[in-house]
Image (tube, rainbow, N blue to C red):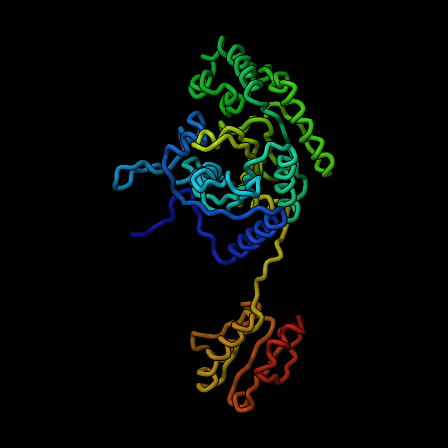
Length: 422
């Protein structure tokens, strides 16, 4: 029987994993500069956490979750996103009582959604997520958006477009909600079954429907911006001011609602504005969720965050022809001549690796010519030739692969020679 990888998943081979490592390290470094601390949560959680935290009217909960019962009969779900798990950890570990507020966290890890696989959308995918909980200062909103923009720009992406909206506070959302119901209800039978279900539960999500996006009522639907109370308007104006002060360009789109139920006030997406990226142009999205901590059992705590797919990021980099500066080659490759040299190679390898060098040697009993070819394939900067004469002098013949130059180098000077040349 031949085994194949499950649909919607991928093997990331060594030539590609270097890119992932580079991007993940860039994320770690950027979050450190913004003073966000890494959190790691379980890959599976109680199903109810996502039903309450993500929203039972969302496509994620209704159609896309990987849910199963364990041997104790408990319903568990592979996490489809990271915010709910992070908020659960925030509540369970009483982070709301920490002295330093807001609590600023980030995570990188696999998420799982059962949906139709397509380019940039997998059933198992990796998310980078950022969450700031404990402050309702609009400056935090601008900081989170700035972090997301910096991440893409520092990787070299251009033609980025930031789109923002305000979903308002509870009062504003309720007034808008009632207006949406009045607008859609007379002709709701013309919409898909999902929209009919959402009419009373969460009519805002009708605006996010992909099936009925071209229906004439979509174009004339009431705008949330017309229902913002003075407090919500002022909050949104402050976010926009901070973004302008930070030289971050943006567009306001009143139809931007996001796909999750827990958002209020600021919502945003970052898109690729240009040709060649296909139908999916959104790179990341996020927003403020001031009621989510309470929904999951904690005290009233404001929060804001975003999540982005590393797969989609890699697609964008490829589309724009951006080559990441990943290290592909070796510092050195040891070539041995004779049994004594071969037996001495493991000790030398171990010593050089402990000194911080990336080195390798032949384990397939190749002749010298084959070893030299292997060094070339692995893009070694230097070849360290070790034979009986070199062993006798506690040295190696160091060959610079770019120039072909050779010199005899004592074993204890190899590291310095390589580092000086670099």
